[in-house]
Figure (cartoon, rainbow, N blue to C red):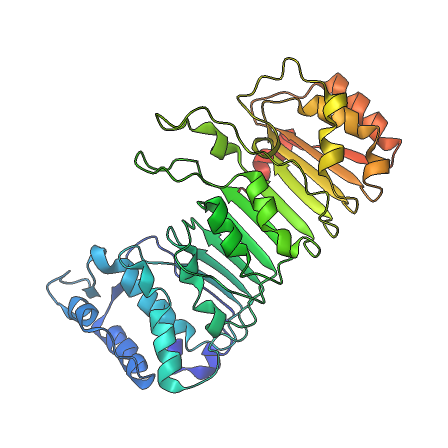
Length: 378
C-alpha cells in the first residue's frame, strides 16, 4: 500500500471512494491500515476493528465488514488515505448514511493528533455525495483552505453555517433548501464566481411540508455576490412537476424575473422551469407587453442558454428579444436553445429568429438534437 511508501503517496493527485461494491481486506492489509492509523494517533475504532477482524464473516474470502457499517468503514479508510496524500488535488467522497456526522471525522482527528497544518492544502476540487445537511462539508474549511470548486450532491437543508470563503465554484444538484436556507448557505461563499443550482422536487416525502426555494429565491440569495458572479445555472423543471400536498392550495411558482443587476454576469443557463409556469395559462399572453427577457438579462451577458423547454411562450419571448438583443445585451454573442427531448423545433420559426439575431451579431444554436450526448448533472 502507498501508505507505506511516501514517494508514491506524494504522487497521488486524485481519490474517489466509490460507494459501489464491497471492500474485502486480508488480515495483513488490515494490520497495515491499523498500523498507519496508530502512527497518526487515530487507532481504528473498536467496533469497526471487531467487525473487520471477525474470521467468521466470510470464511475463505479474507476479512470483510458488515454491510450496515460499509459507509463508515469507507469514510474511515478514505480519511486515512487522504491524510497520507499531501499533494491531492481532486477528491470524490461518499458520506456514510449510517452516521453522516462522522464525515471527515478521522481526518480531523489526524490533524489534531499530529498538530500539523492543513492536511489537504493542495486540494482544489471536491465532489461530495451527501444526501444530508450541507454543513457536513464544513471540515473542508480547515483541511482544504485552498479549495476552489465544491460539488454537493443531494444536499438537504442547513443545520449550521457552512463557510468556505475561498470557494469560487459551487455546484448543487438535487438541492433541497428553503428560501431561508439557501440565503444562509450562500452567505458562506463570499468569493463565489460560478453557481450551478439544480433543484430537487418540491415534496420529497409525503410528510414533508417544507416549501423549497424558487428560482427567484436563489437569485435573491446571491445578492452579496451579484457584482462579481460570472456564471449562473438554474434548473427547476422537476421542482414544478410534483403536485402540492393536500390542503396547501394551488402552485404559483415564484419564477425568475430578473438578474438585470448582476453586473458581472457573462454566462446564464436556465431551464424552462425557471422562467415559465409549465401549468400556466398563456392563452392571452402578449410577449411584446411582457418583454420578459429584456427585463431579465444583465447588460454584460455574452452567452444565454435556454434548455429543457417544454411549455410556455418561449418562442414568442425569444422573438421579441431577438430584435432588441443588441440594445439590451450589447456583448451577447450566442443563444443556445434546446427543447425537451420529445419536442420538435418549429423550423420556420428557427430560420426567422436565426436571421433576425444575426443582424444584431448573435448566433442561435439549436442543441435539441444533440442534447442527449451532453453530460447530465441532474
